[in-house]
Length: 111
Length: 113
Image (cartoon, rainbow over all chains, first blue to last red; front, side, top):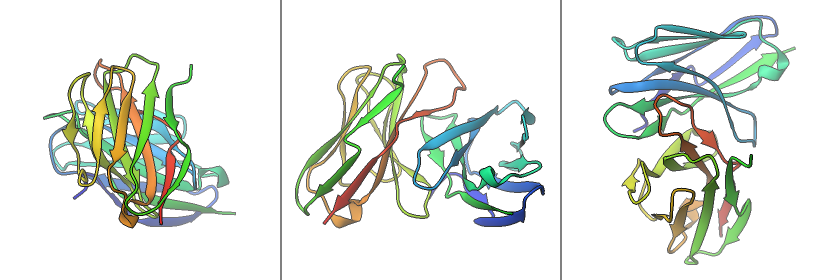
């Protein structure tokens, strides 16, 4: 089974609202990464948070990491139509060099 | 910089045919990865190579073989293609120094009839 599991699977919000998606994982990690994928396109790296970090910001993105709960959250503030995409978390194992993805959250921003 | 280059971009095969997907990176990265992505799904790790000369199985290795030809190139081979292998295949690489994001190729869309 996949290491990272995102929640919710799908999310629809009004433009301007904040969007929060969560990721849970199972084993020890070196870092956790969030990616965006527009329909039919490749993956775009958004943000990487190391296992010894608790929170990280990049523009309208805020990522938190709780290693005790093995979970992370991605917050997108003041959402825009262009944020409509699928969002994936990926965990880099601390035991080997595997990087495993979750199933993703499909975010739809309503005008 | 070209980054991660995958060839071909599209391919249609018949069941039982063989095929090699090529991936090359020009960033001097140590680790390389092959993933497949099925509709509505996340990426699943097929094989990875932590360094030149080493390869390891990922989550879904059955039906595939890989070869880390040199530091730049990591190929994925389907010896006898099956319809269940219809997917989009992504190659990625990561630098040797720690805690860096993956760099992805644009993907190969593979259809097995």
